[in-house]
Length: 295
Image (tube, rainbow, N blue to C red; front, side, top):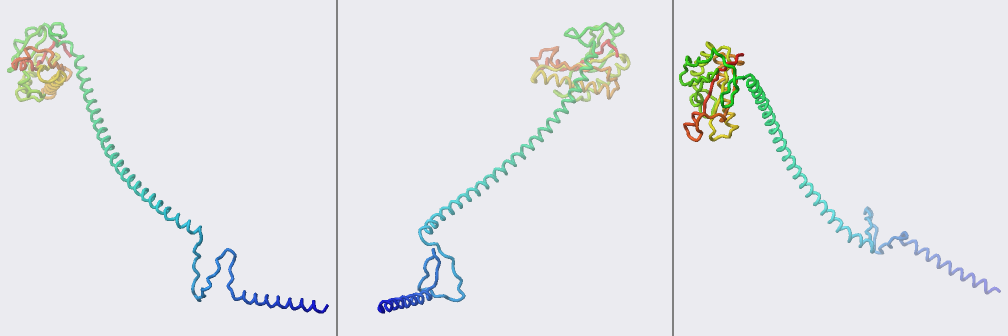
């Protein structure tokens, strides 16, 4: 009976000694948390030294290091592409702006040209209306080649014999008197500028009209040849020459503008052969027609 309690007490003493030894050994080891690597047995603590960040270890750290380098390269490549695209777009934008500036300048120029053309067209329309009014007021200046016939004025029949104008041909056509002058005597070829010879002829004609025919309408007919220029161009020259004669008769000699009528014939009524130089020179003429119509 006494043996068993003694044996049990001895066994407990041994367990206590072992437990104390274990506790003593554990107090001298640095502690660590679950999930952390055990400390390096050879590490010695140095006062003032800051701890460094933990370096990832294991398979996960190897995978991460292998993926970051290609991603950085790809990001750099995309950034370079964006820079190149931006430079290209900037260049294109500058070119577009420059082209737009050129187009604006062209549009402004065309607008100014259109404005000038409209202004000239308005002036031409006003001149055309003036010619139309004068033509409507003409009731007799046509001859047998298409002229309208007028009632004869007995006071004018045979009166052309007393009219003398150097450089002009005087023709009596029924009740009308036609004063024919070569255009080459009045103008430089193809122009509407009167020369000094023309001024002398027109001055003498104006004096006769004032003295003998102050109330008769005067038709100024301008004729050209049919050589070289298109018919429309010839008519334009004829109109300009007739207008120059009317301007001189009214502004320089004082004939009333309502007494004068412009008739630009062009090449429509030749009196000679246009195939010869002499015939063409004869066809280029100004005819001042004193009509029996009054104003």
